[in-house]
Image 1 (spheres, rainbow, N blue to C red):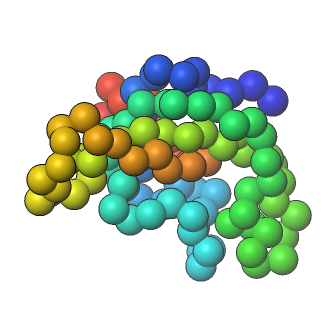
Image 2: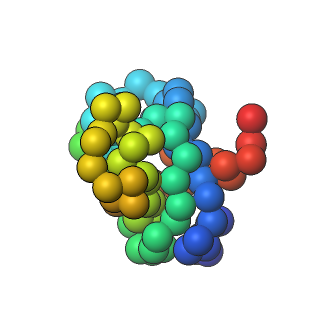
Image 3: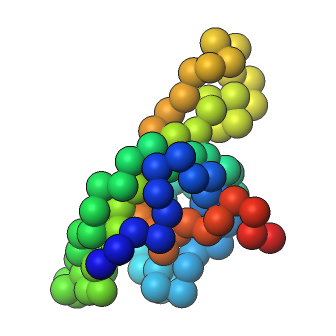
Length: 102
């Protein structure tokens, strides 16, 4: 299984649940980054989807997991720290789209 995005690529987190996540209660993608743009810091590889595993499914098809870096000022409106501060969040590929996508 190959990764759709490479390190250094800008990606946007989906605002709405992707089709593969509909109807599931266990969602690993934090609400506070949905709709935000970050940069792929690391491709961690394919793993079984925890959204399916949490409800007794086999977690297949496997999904590529990424570490995505976001500027803290974009995540928290009132962030008063260093403008270069970031936060890394691990996100599965089905939650990501190219940053230039509408």
